[in-house]
Image 1: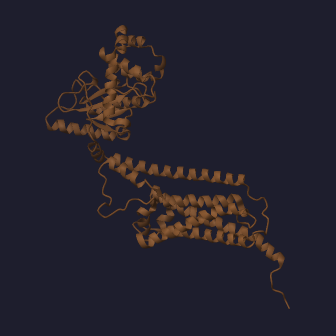
Image 2: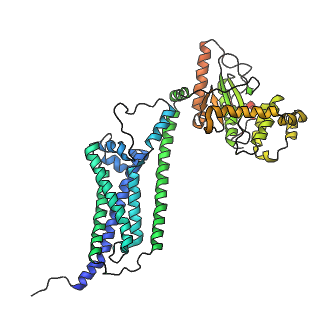
Image 3: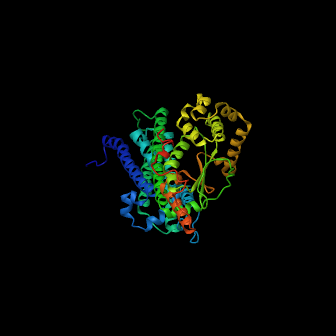
Length: 469
């Protein structure tokens, strides 16, 4: 009679091969789940066209869109969206920015899935078959087991939400959840084998706390890298959206008119570039002589903005020496002293060009360079009235913006222009054109006046500081 029972040798071979086969299946499932989650995350951050698998499985406006655009695609879930509060066409730049912030307020569930599958893959890939071997430390085995069980409960919850709340199925989401259940099945099977034979087998090179700590550190770095990459993609998408929005003259006009107006407290003797009488616009610029961004805007102002307005833009310069610029306040007193002797504009450009020298700057010699009375210049720099004017300018900006005050702060007709808006030629062109139309309507001249002293690319603009300086 033939004995068909497995031989002890064959049984031992089966025991040895199981962890390797189980590990291969687990790694394949976690890698597939990570790829699916990455595709869904990219669809959230960069649009569905960013991932061809999603574009191929889900048509436009289909069930995938319903799931990915639902409040349940974020954790914690976003606010419920009723028909009355459905998205409408954005009418201003501020609304677009706020809308993007609201959309990005939660963490996409797909990103959580990517983090989860990456963690599982790295844990078992680095620890190897020992992580599923009966001789492996039970306490280390339970760490991923608890995470996997918790994740599968989440998968069940999301499947229920798709079925009963959203009423639509996302095929890639379902495939990702299926990978999760495969991982659970493999790990639970290994756990049960271990419980049945807790004393059998001895794992070669068992995992030590030091090795596990190294694996946890590796996982942490990998997750941080994934998050940085996804956020970078998301920010790039937001920037593209804003740039596309901002390059339209019509939308720029709406964005500008949507901004609140602030009181600027302009004095008659403030340092300014005068404009022709009649209809004009007023630009108020707060800055300090040590600020590189202020110098860059000053170059843009003289080389690009003033030529567009043909002498019909009044520019008022005010002081806001930033606390982090150690020498800015003293430079501001020098600019005030130059204003008193009628040389503000010349001093303004020269100090920007030499802002790196302000720590040991010779203001007496500087007054001589400007052709001013050095004694009076230094006396005016030290006068209490000079310091009071600078503090008044600071208070004006703080009253308008409070703790959000930053330089350069640029106000056009009392409206604060953000960095993106003031850097776009299209914005200034649209504003200049609006003023030209208004003056023409009232029979007023445009250009060719004594105030039009900044023709484009002329020598009059060469004293402004190039951004490269």
